[in-house]
Length: 66
Image (cartoon, rainbow, N blue to C red; front, side, top):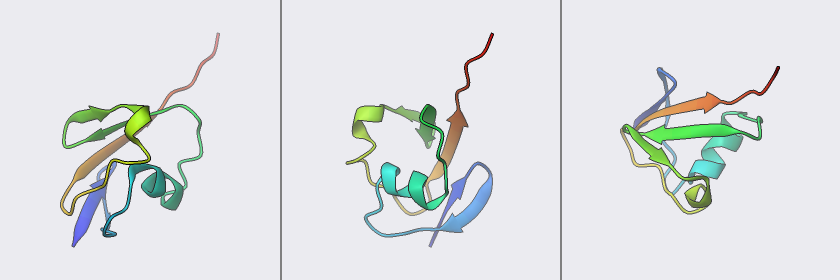
C-alpha cells in the first residue's frame, strides 16, 4: 500500500487527511497547492479530505517576491 508524493513513493496511512500528510512529509510552507490524482484540493478541505491508497499527489510551494 503506497502513495506517490511529488514523484516519490511513500507509505499509505489509512484515514490520513491532507493536513496530516503535509505534516508527516514536513511541508511547512504556509502557502501550498495540493493536487490529488489531478484534482486541486481546496485548502478548506485539507482537514477532512482523506488520502486513498494509490493516490498520486503533487504539492507545490507558493513563494512571493519582488
